[in-house]
Image 1 (tube, helix red, strand yellow):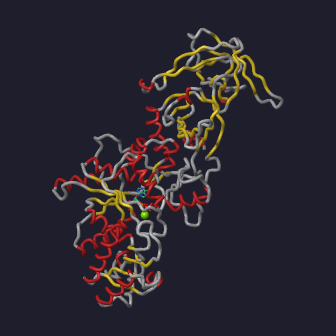
Image 2: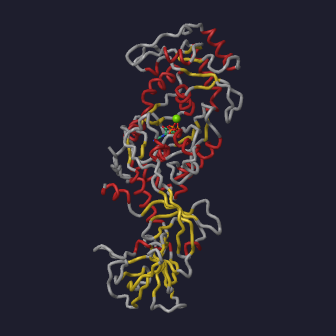
Image 3: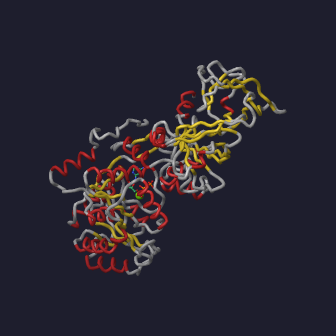
Length: 558
Ligand code: ATP
Ligand code: MG
């Protein structure tokens, strides 16, 4: 089921379940103030799912006068990189949030190590010499208990000695691990003596070669939360089975009792959202990079022309669910249209041009008029438009044999010219040898007072400017309503027409803008943003979104 319910973004909406917990905690005096964290692993660029988590964590802290830490969960040196750290910081800032502290799990390696020693000394951890395969094979199943490791009852002294030597680099990768000593028959498989540390002789992007043992997520995460005194540690639903372990370590170490709360991971139709898959799309050149405007990454949608406001509104509308929620991509598109409608400059652009000659308009004559930049915002001002004898209009705005309700241009039919108000009438067309229309000949009527059904946009052949226009569509043709089956390759569903590059003609005022960052609405066509590949002599515009949901129509027809 696609969930498009709107959890309205007004302050009067009912509390979500995490807000309820926080309000109860504050009312009970459990915490004076709240501290949340956003804990990305720097192994890829952030996507819209992460944006949901960012808006939630930072949003809660803002709402309740607390703070949020940005903590890099960098406990797996193999896949992590400072390039990702930098991009993550840029993306969080762009979304409009500032963190109280920039922290790294790797900064806590020494503390985590001494806590591991403390657990060993309390008899809650041991060094295991079994291989990964042996450990996996003896874990048991959901219905059958696991088997104790033959190394489970090593003495505290021996465990301390071995773990110290693990740290000192005396063993090779995989030779030993440190495991928590819990219960090999526990009904929760994760509680069956989970691995706390593994040996990895790998360079870490921050600690270099200082460490050759690295903590596992389950051991590191709760302890990092506790070190920072995080009050509400919010993560996605799949971690609910990890919560007993999160609590177990904190309880055994008798440290600050951070608590974990889970909400549903955001899924969006027509896209994939795991960093592994996104990396594959980049590496395999299915897209031009992490910031390809078709990617669901934050840098991709930013380059496409999405605004931080629209993403925040989207996150709010999606709300906080406890059950898996698949959100229709059209909700995200609706949010960006709402926002761009308010802030974008209106400009005329013709993307599929055909020449139109106003035969009774004298050659060389021009006239100008002022046109408002944005009907939604008076302060956006006005620009000048110049009309002359030869124009370009959209090829689609003309039909030689139109159906009944075609209120645009057709032989003998009239339309109004946007902004000038003149009514033009199609008298005849000129075709090339192949029968393609090359010119539409019209006459105009200086009397603007008559009423006609259609108004079309245009650019003047004399002063319009060519620009490159990139028309994006969904990256995948498949909505992915259900999880993709293992045997299927999601790349088979890539949309072959997700990018169309064309030359469009735009009114000159578009290129006068000092600030290239202002979004524009190409009237009747969609919202567009200047692409970062643009140069002074070659402007490139990305279509952020069409004016209307064209897919809704296509789907209805099918
Ligand atoms: P992915 O599975 O996409 O690779 P991840 O969960 O491994 O993502 P992390 O860097 O570990 O990525 O995530 C940082 C935070 O963002 C975590 O708290 C995680 O729960 C949250 N998060 C990740 N993906 C989503 C999502 N789709 N919806 C909501 N929150 C998410
Ligand atoms: Mg992760």
